[in-house]
Structure formats: structure tokens, C-alpha cells
Image (cartoon, rainbow, N blue to C red; front, side, top):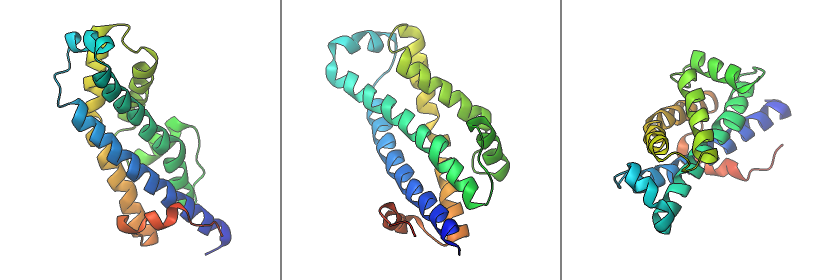
Length: 174
């Protein structure tokens, strides 16, 4: 394998390990947040309940971070590992859908829009915010399935199972 191909492989696998870790903490935040009853009253109480506000903030941050890692780094690196040239996010999502890595490019784009609303429209409309939080929680299963597809690519293409990903995180590039 050429040095460039090896670098591409190592970057993809290291990024997959980062996505694995981010998904684990996102799932933790999801479980903790959705153990609560989230409604308009809950949203309105957030300014008085800092512990709950921090739980929400952790979930929103991790929801966005996982999407950023997958959309901006993992997906382009996976395409490069297949000797394809990555393009704009929407094109990459469409290609990932064709390859079976994600089930629905439109759903990923919707999750991205939701991420932006959760960050930038934080609690300005309690009704909408409560709906958006529930919608975000609904995307966790899609994220898990997509991660599993990228993991399958790592195993099939490079023979690297999940338990070996950590070794690539700090690997020196050839």
C-alpha cells in the first residue's frame, strides 16, 4: 500500500475511533436527558435549574459534535479510502446513502438543521425548543446505525475491528 493510501487509511480509522467515543458520550447524555419529562414547562424552568440546563447543554453539544465529526471528517475520509473525491457535505451525504453508509441523506441534512436551531435558537421559543429536543433525540438511532456502517467498512476494507480502532488514534502517519 502506498504511503498516501496508508495515510488515508490511518486518518479514516483514527476519525472512526473519535466518532466511536463521541457517540458513546452522546448516548450517555441522551439517556440522562431523556430520563426527564421534556415539555414546555421543563424548558421554561431551565433558567432556574442549572443542573438540568447543563445536562441539556451537554446533549446539544455532543449532538452537534458527532455530526460535525461524521459529516466534516469521517465521511470525506471514508470516501477517500475508497479512492473517491469528497465534495460538499450534501453531495457526500448523497454518496454515503448510495453506498449504504447512511439510510437517508435528507434525514442527515434535517439533523444538521436541527443542530443549528438547538444551538442558535436556544430557548427563544419554548414550544418549538421542546419539539426540537425530542426530534434530536429521535436521531440517535440513525447515528448508531451509520456508525455501525462505517465500522463495517473499516472491518471489511482494512480488517480493523472496533476493538483495534484506539490503536490508530495516535498512530504516526507514514
